Length: 342
Image: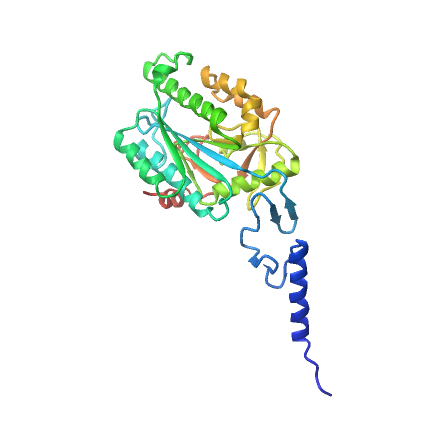
């Protein structure tokens, strides 16, 4: 008896089925090789389409109802002061300028890595600088110029911030450094309020980012804000000190990372213009009146709003190796440092 070959028939049926799925907007996965024939991707690819959908295997598709329209990245820089309130050396024991350069370079590398996904999102970078050397500022310009993104460097004038009140530390140098830090924070909040249209990412100049940080934060924001129908705060760092106590956390799925709810962060965080307007008085209070701990007003906001941090960390906070506010667990700190050398 002649054997009937059904290979061509099955292949034709499969092609027709894939075409039908494309027409109706339905994604499928071939579990024999983990490819997605409708979108011509593999399961290892970024399966999301910013502003439209996020696909998490095997959780399925989330249609985005809260798309990100723009993001302003506001970086506070000072290459002249090592640590504001202490004299400890940072991890790798380099000049402060090296941490600033690598922080900015890591963000540019992350934006370059994600540029094909960010083409419909308006991006601008602001540098708020306090007393860095002219040659350092020129180097910062050259780093940012590697990518075609609008940017602006703002030189801080401390004489314009007489309203800032710092705590008495019996140390004029530390008090002056703190006043400058608070002036930078206040300026960053004012820029966000006056010029931003959607998301704002506030960054201190000792946070070195993984290349996937920007795409993960934007994708996670869209997905989780859509699913929960609320605006968010996102922190890029998995801080070690948050594992020192038994606070409850909810675990959520972003794009390629898990995100957990936290009730504390430092001053590097992403949020929306809506939440900045909603909590403007609280943010202003933090920027104009020093608290102990400094972020107390921000943490009070987290009692009402969701703040999420990634597992594992998306960025390394370059403090002293023994600082509980610094090195995130389970990440290759040296590799990330070396990848962002200028």
